[in-house]
Image (cartoon, rainbow, N blue to C red; front, side, top):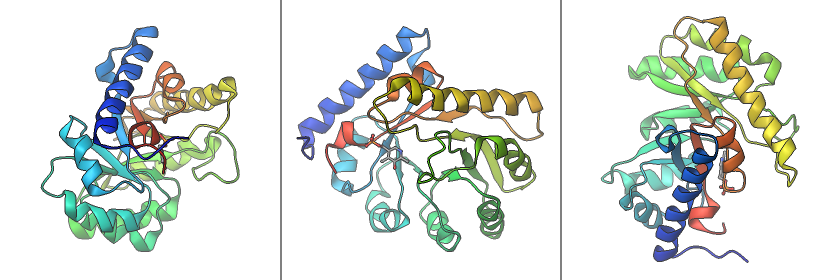
Length: 236
Ligand SMILES: *Cc1c(COP(=O)(O)O)cnc(C)c1O
């Protein structure tokens, strides 16, 4: 059984993840610098997050607003960039903005976009967003439906305080790698479709996909951000 990782484990695990990223890039002729490692830090204490940040990690993300509020004050003197990767209720937007989250990766609906726009305008802030797509079709997953993605991108592109920088998805949780790969391939296809539509103010550079169990497949299919939690910090 996987245990919660101690300090040495975290450092070893980080090195192992970086090696996996390099190997996956090499396999498909990509440069490792094209893939950013984002640490998914849900349930991980600020002390343990700091161990990873001290070892060269820079990008962290929570998926619950409560954890952002509870933990980020303790990290404010440790350089890092914070993204948000969980379902976001509109009444919690102010907490995200107050805690200096640089990018919301989970923008998946118009009412959230409208409210984000209002709050960012009031705060005089431009927020990076990724559009979360439900590529697996599972009813339990958040995300805009693939066929509605381009329309949502067009709408969000017109909002002056939001800057769409990419797409995010959670692959199917399955041992069938072909089905997992199909999710990632679909996200890449949507990126191509959006770029082909040449929408003003939209540059879809980032594809946030791949986690501890499937990051190689995601990198093979074009991931630029992999989100890794348990493979670094151990069991939750
Ligand atoms: C927890 C989480 C991850 C990381 O999952 P692991 O399997 O622990 O690597 C990635 N993305 C999201 C949205 C998450 O909530």
